Length: 494
Image 1: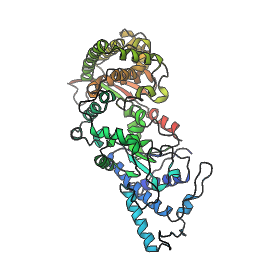
Image 2 (image 1 turned 135 degrees about the vertical axis):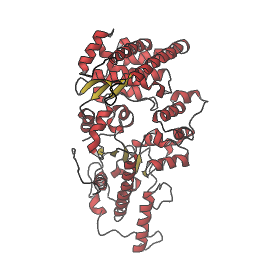
Image 3 (image 1 turned 180 degrees about the vertical axis):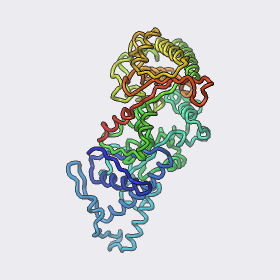
Image 4 (image 1 turned 60 degrees about the horizontal axis):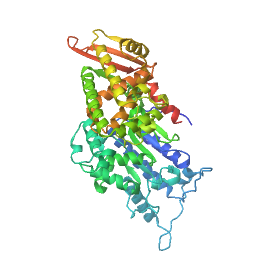
C-alpha cells in the first residue's frame, strides 16, 4: 500500500494500463474500495469511460471461461489466474449438451456488447440479477462481481441538466441558482410553484433504481430522459454505491466541493489523478480568492438585503432564528452544516482537519450581530483596495492590521465566517444563491485568511500590469503551497 507516480509518453496507453491493473486488483481483493478516477475535462472523462468499457468487457469475457471463485474477506483465491486460464470450463445448454465453440463465441460477443451499452434490462444474457444500487454501498467489486459492476460519471449541473428551461443557460451560477429554486427542501415542503419534475422523479424512485454497467455523462442524461430522473442528483446518489467513479479534480481537491460530494468515499478507495502535471495549479486555485471593487460593492448590497430578510423573519417566523441560535450554541461542524441542505450550499473552504470542532463564537451567533461583523470586515477590505502601491503581506500581519484599524478586537470569529454565512442563508431560506456570491467570496476570503498562517500571501494590486494608467484594484489571497490541498488526499487514501 502507498502512492505511486506513472509517467509515460502521450498515446502509449497510460489509462488502459492503470484501469487493467486497478480493476484486476479490485476483483482479487475484497477489502479494496472503489476506484476514483479524476480528470481535468469532460472530454477526458469520456475517453476514460471508453477505455473502462473495453477493459471491463475483456474481464467479463475472461471471467466467464471458468466458474468464479468464492471470495471472502478472510481469504481470496486466485481469480485473475483462473480468469486467464487457457482451459475454460465447458458450459451446458439449457436443454442439455455441451455448448459449441461458435455458441460460446456468440455469447461472449453479446456479453461485451451489453456491457458497453446501458444493459440494465432483465433480458440480458447474464445469469446474475440486476445490480441494485441500494445494496451496493457495502459491496466491493470483488463481492458483486465484474458483471454487476457499476461505474458512473459526475459533472456540474450545467453539464448534466435536462430540464427544458434550465438547460438552455450556459452560465454555471445561473443554472445552479435555477436548480436550487426548484429543488430546495423548503421550497418543496411549501408545495406549489415550479418544481423540477426530474428531481421529483429522482426523489421518489432513487432507492428503487436497478442499475449496473458503465454510465457516461451522456448516458446519465439519456437515462434521466427515459425514466424521468434528474441525472445530476442521481449521479450524486450513485457515487457512494458505485465501484468506479469518474469526475473532475475539483470534486476531490477543492474543500468546498469535496466536503459535499466526496466526504463519504471509503478510505480504502484507490484515487487516480490523470494528467497530474497540472495538479499543482488546481490545488492553488482551489484555495485562492480574489476580491475587487465590484465584489466589495455588491457585498455591501448583499448585507443590506440579508438585514431586510432577517428583520422580516424576526416578525414572521422568530422560531426559526431561535432554533438556529440553539444549534450554533451546541456547535456547527461540517456534518451538521451540509447534512440537511440537499446539497444547496458549499462546504467550508478549509480542509476538514482544520475546521474548528467547537461552537460558533458568541459575538456572531445572532444573525444581526453577524451581519454587523461582516459589514465591518467589508469596510476594512474596501480601505485596503484604496492602496496605490503593490504590496504583499503574510496573513498574520494582515489580520494584525485589521485588528488595529477596525472595531474587531478578536479576529478569531473570522474562521467561522463561511460556515456562519451558510447557516444564515439556509435559515433565511435563500434560493437565489448566485445573487449572494459576492458576500460568499468575502466570507471565503476571511475564513481562509484566519485559518492558515503558513502557505498563503495577501497580494494587493492597484492596477493591471497591462493597463497601469487605469485603476483596477485587486486584493488576492494567494495559496503558494499546493501541498496544503493535496496532503489530506495522501493521508486519507493509502
